[in-house]
Length: 224
Ligand SMILES: Cc1cc2nc3c(=O)[nH]c(=O)nc-3n(C[C@H](O)[C@H](O)[C@H](O)COP(=O)(O)OP(=O)(O)OC[C@H]3O[C@@H](n4cnc5c(N)ncnc54)[C@H](O)[C@@H]3O)c2cc1C
Image (cartoon, rainbow, N blue to C red; front, side, top):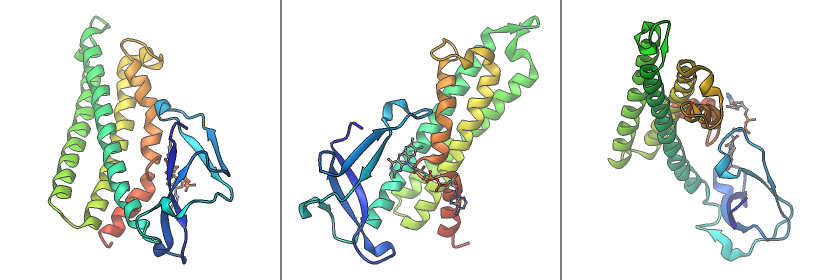
């Protein structure tokens, strides 16, 4: 909604991957219609439906070579998916931090919440997933910067995104159980961060390539 230009993949050639070009389309071009979408989370990203009806685009707005737009789209996906995985991992850690802090401070049935084994195990399970996800991201980062094949890296990034969104889903849920009703209140202290993280879970599981599509991409990258 706030962007002046949209980078759009359009069909300019034959069917298949070799017929897509990247165009820069200005929001004021005749035929461009914008509609702000009401989303569950990601409120700062102003997610918008962009409709294009017979929009005429000057040839100088072509990015790169004609019909060669697929590769840059794919390379950009790696960046987008990796950064989403990092964000999801960090939000999971926020959930864990807030859950530990609250479990230490809150007393129920005569002892601190953290004194109950069932609560401690929730924290351990969250920590296990956060550490595993963080380690995977470090490994993917290493592979990426070691110039491993683009296809192999794309598969690893896809798996890392699934790992991170599922970690976030688990940690937001378990942290919410540890904090109880406070995690249901927007902006509460403590609890507000967990409520916010919970609202972000779905976009990390769907946006930038859904979990199902990521798993399929990884399987293909591994030539299964
Ligand atoms: C907040 C937000 C921001 C977004 N921003 C952008 C953006 O900037 N640019 C952009 O281009 N897109 C954007 N998207 C769109 C996003 O990439 C899609 O929502 C996502 O790729 C899923 O596609 P879809 O919604 O069309 O679901 P569909 O394609 O209708 O799929 C529905 C469900 O079926 C599953 N599915 C589909 N095909 C298969 C299959 N072959 N096997 C198994 N399961 C399958 C999917 O995983 C999904 O869960 C955004 C989405 C959100 C939520």
